[in-house]
Length: 342
Image (cartoon, rainbow, N blue to C red; front, top):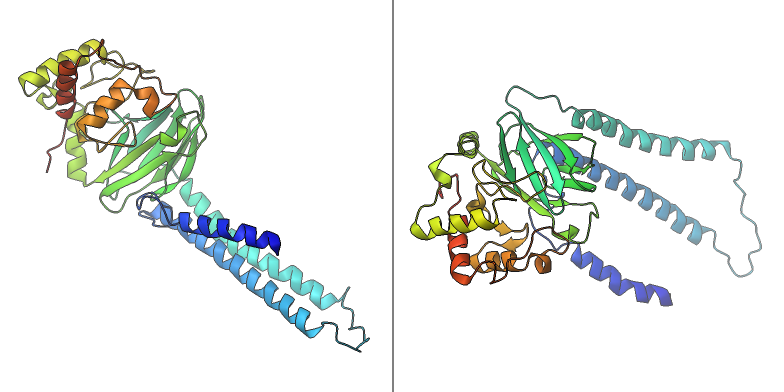
């Protein structure tokens, strides 16, 4: 009993914390058929477990009360070991419960393993890097970083790889997680029924900055997705060209300091560098988790190691990029958009 009182406060704290977190980062609020199937299996498992707990507890309490030792009563209750009927009952009931759980599990497993493309499916090759995500659309010949755009009501086939260590791709509101393993391609699929932004995370302990390796899945209508894909695929599009004198100066700063690692409009970057920045100005977060604003963007460029430990982006102090050049660079990055603001 003494230990119970020590454990209870921590139990209440854990129960309280279980309700914390982002609304779009929860497997308990499914937003597509894959997540819905998995959510139904969770509920079925919980119902069976609750049923077993209630029945066992009821029998335990009944036996405890009915056959408790009474003053002056030396009668020994009837012993039931070896009772054939009881042996059959407590063998058959667990088998039935396992069958109730196994049948929908097997059926859903085959459904979830069906990654054959449909007529309008989108294929996305997802590569995990320390500590960012690369999304390549092989059929559309485009690549994006951190934000994965998909059309609604469309089956999205996901091929998962990793460039360095094991990562794990998870968008709780759309589907369960799947590992990204170097040299091995795992696949899965999901579908978003509603437009919106769905938060994703890496669920593998992949290094020092693992807990900040977030990304977003942006579900838009088919026309918007086609526009996004078309604009991302045009390197010469005016959409990624500087729109002011300051932005033009920022483009020069970018070419001198960032082009070797980050591509814009199909130019620059390298396989081991950083994410594609073609639509960087449309992001709502920086480095996967910082609110998008000029101050955070400068902090990220000045001190990336302090904000996301273990990442490979070098720091640019005032000797590398002075304040005026930084302001111009931020102005240029803010203009990198391929969709209308509306």
